[in-house]
Figure 1 (cartoon, rainbow, N blue to C red):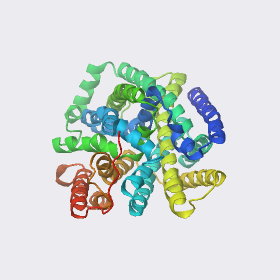
Figure 2 (figure 1 turned 90 degrees about the vertical axis):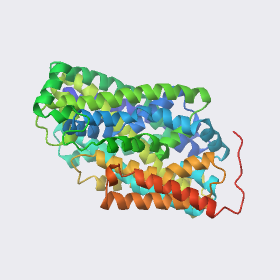
Figure 3 (figure 1 turned 90 degrees about the horizontal axis):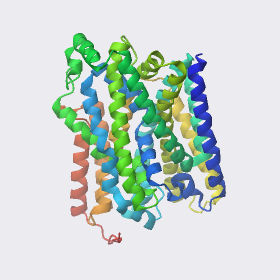
Figure 4 (figure 1 turned 30 degrees about the horizontal axis):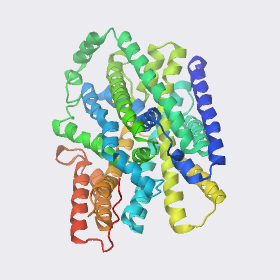
Amino acid sequence: MNWAVITPLIVFLIIIFAVGLWSNKSVLTTNSFLEEYFLGERQMGGFILAMTMVATYGSASSFIGGPGVAYNQGLGWVLLAMAQLATGYFVLMVLGKKFAIIARQYKAITLIDFLKERYHSKAVVIISAGSIIIFLFSSMTAQWIGGARLVESLTGMPYTTALLIFAFSVLVFVIVGGFRAVALTDTIQGVVMFMGTLILLIATIKAGGGVSKIISDLAAENPNLISPFGAGRTLTPSYVSSFWILVGVGVVGLPQITVRAMSYKNSKAMHNAIIIGTIVVGFIMLGMHLIGVFARPVLPGVKVGDTVMPLLSMKVLPPVVAGIVLAAPMAAIMSTVDALLILVSSALVKDIYLNYIKPNAGDQQVKKVSFSVTAITGILVILLALSPPDLIIWLNLFSFGGLESVFIWPVIFGLYWNKGNKNGAITSMILGMGSYILLDRFYPNAFGLHTVVIPIVLSFAGFIVASLVMPQKEAVKELKV
């Protein structure tokens, strides 16, 4: 084992666990376990909100899978990835103060709480919880694999051993600390991600002999590596344009992102988060994907794309610095896994168990069930991650598309269209989920567009038509904002 690389990572994990233990005091002493454990009592300031959105959105795909695909595809993938620049800005502007205010009026702790109160439908709750569980298992599996790949590359341990070590660390942290621990450590992790990206980008450019030489080497190997169409000319204009729906517009429908938009403390925090989050996301996405492309001349012949980032770090940086930089992907993966575990746990505990199984459960019983559900979920994901694909990014993007197809219109129309009702929401969710799964399996990227486009269009039409044709008998209560 390369202890010079591993030691900084161990120190980083110790700091993260210390924050988790400190946050556990709030979990144990709070008057509202659910609001504290799943939402941090809605007390996030602007910087913490920005960093937690960055760290949650910046995942194993951004730091492990994304550079791996960029290594294979070239600068065209960098162009495609930069569609994510406006994500944080777009999400907070669309949801804005209205979502946070209404969530407070509904006393909503989860996105499903909001949908339940808005549409007064058991079917909406069941479909929502089922969708979160189905698609987030795919996303969590990608994060587990990314963390295991990182530990495997650094230590030389077998993949399975690395997976168990990483998973155990994350599970203990989330079970102990809850949402507050996740939000606070996301702040640390967001800063580490930013600095790690900067250091590795500079080191990679230096190792490659400068940007001009790297570009020349790429052109000599394959001119398509420096074109907008990718090494195999598969990144067509229609695909690249439609990809922005997946990583831009559609992100409004991701439950792990929307829950952040109901947890900040005031308008100033939201406005600061929009500015900070946009800058940090833009830099990290540009930097990490450029690193993946620039790594090709510096580190030729990498067979498994997901190992490019850790192998490059150990080649172009001194061991101790490499350890510090590799805390960035570890931070990204841990923060995303943390958020997804909390989200799945809240869907099962808050939205299913408390709503329909045991509504009168006491606080102590809810604590036990929450901890147990989080642990069981983690174990199931470990089992799914035992047979990893070569590139985890496709697992993550499958999860993104599925969740967006289900949630984007029930969330947006739920906020901004009073005629929208439970019939529209149910139709939209079923059409979105069903068409996305069928297209992904049998006709991906139909008409040259990303797979998510047609399901989002169908779910949009389904919501409008069903709401108008089958109006809800009881009036929807209009809330003042």
